[in-house]
Amino acid sequence: MRTIFDPEHDAFRQLARTFFEKECAPHTARWEEQGHVDRDVWLRAGDVGLLGWEAPEEYGGAGIKDFRYNAVMTEEFIATGSVGFGYALHNDVMPPYLIDLTTQEQKKRWLPGWVSGELITAIAMTEPGAGSDLKSITTTAKPTDGGFRLNGAKTYITNGLLADLVLVVAKTEPTAGHRGISLLMVERGMEGFHRGRKLDKVGMRAQDTAELFFEDVFVPATNLVGEQGRGFYHLMKGLSQERVGCAVTSTAVMERALHLTCEFVRSRKVFGQPLGAMQNTQFKLAEVAASFEVCRTFTDSVVAELVAGTLAPHRAAVAKMFVTERQWEAIDECVQLFGGAGYMNEYEIARLWRDTRIQRVLAGSNEVMRHIIGRSLELESA
Image 1 (spheres, rainbow, N blue to C red):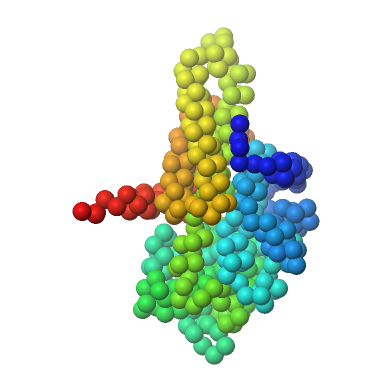
Image 2: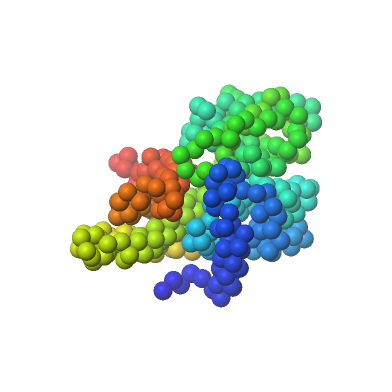
């Protein structure tokens, strides 16, 4: 029994499942092959209200800030076997920046397209030489008359090829450390903004991930998001929600993998009996089921804390680190029970194994999560 959802969330769940079954799941193989989803799926999702619902009604949204809707959408996306559609970054990661930090003029320019799917979003933090350590970024945005001159390169950018709005993390004061970081919104078509190659990833092959290059791009002052020099603090506030999203995803993957594996072992015959009749199979899947139950209960609790506004950063780190580690263990056990079939791309379990390895890296590596959790223990105090 899950207690965090209300009837309106159940109705939204049905809407999301119907959409993914019709508009996404049938295209899995083609999207995997072409390396990105069709742009039209963004517009169709916007039409039925699956994008940017946190935006105020005057900009086309529903004015609802409730991460339970985000959790429902992720659970149904994974449960239907859908791939590639980068809605999670659009809905889960971007709202703290697009809604909480933007001016009225910026909201008027960007939010309607964000809600409709006409403006696909991305956030550019990672660089070839700087990942979790944001203080080490080298992309600069030199203040100039009326705005900034942006120079640098970013990599591993989700939605990088399709994005119309890219929130770029850059140093406006290079010698000020983390106090010199600002957030700038770069728009499609700005002179000097170039997209590199679509990156050849191990997994998530239907999700477009790219390199981005900025060569003396003029970004007007009206595209500064939040306060100049406060970008690091803005990012730290937004990352807790992103980390909860990782836990939601990993929990949903565990459930999907358990379902697929149970179906497989019931029908697979070994030595004249179903693979599921063997004690080793039952014990292994019992462990996966137990891990899933624990992770779901804990993840639901941090989602509730996020909705209530009481979530502490170290709790988000615990969820992200613990659940993604358990998910990886679970998916590995499930692949093992598929035997050779588990290594064949025609089986969904193989794709899940490839796609979800990145969960232990996203939103700050699990090593960084352990550092955050360790600091919360105050072990250096006398």
